[in-house]
Length: 358
Image (cartoon, rainbow, N blue to C red; front, side, top):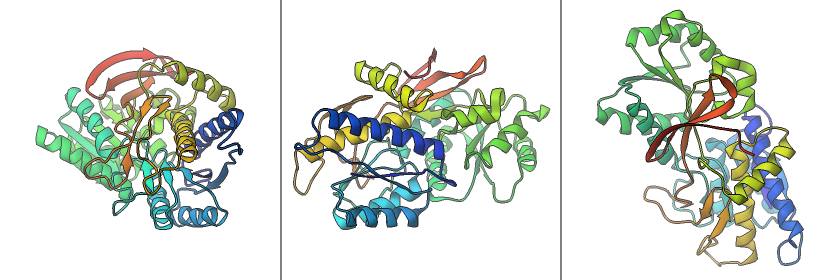
């Protein structure tokens, strides 16, 4: 089985490390249970570095090696390239973590996805913002198809509800200049649609240290605060930054067991990305045990760490989709940045404090 993950910069390497940990744990468990049709499952991991050309080349290389399926990838820009090549080759690809709705330009029978589509998860984030009373929201974005898609989702779900969305181009603004723009526009919330650690970390520092912006909410819907590097670099300044994560409020027995095993491998609490990796290999192992002809995702029903996984056609999305993984808006607790607070769950707002997974 081929596996794609961002393991070097400019990819989010911590996400890649967690993704691979989940993939490898599941592969080890498949082999401990006898493998697939009596044969051991070998995982061939390739680094995409969040580069679309590198991702496409990796798919070609892995196909040449005779892999039976592809797993993984975190970044939407590289996942799109990988999905296009996999579909052209007829090679089953289960995308673990990339959320952009248009994972493929056309309907693709060979491709499926575990992560919720951006239009679904970011809609929940928009609900959270409206519920918090924010009526003037600044979106500070870098140029990318992913960030542009996220801005579009936010605009579609915020503007009709009376929210003013101010779009700020991070190609032309320093962190200090951004602070001035926030004051000029009277924004009550700033959303970071930008890379981590740069420029996201300098922006957070600048906003947190500007006494004129003490009441502004900083948000990161793409999930940057999930990873320990965020807390290491920002400390208390990185707390209370709401982000999206794809975990249930309470893990079941399988999720709890897997979370404990992942913590042991990683040496830290597993992120939702690690669970996505585990679920990906678990699903693909079932697909490979029982070939389904031209539609590899037909009638798949697998117990995952975050619920039963089945695939369906979702309007506007060209690949088979798990609809849906659980969606949370969470942040790091200001009283203890090593802990996460669940602020909102899709369709059910709540505020609770929960320990790290595992």
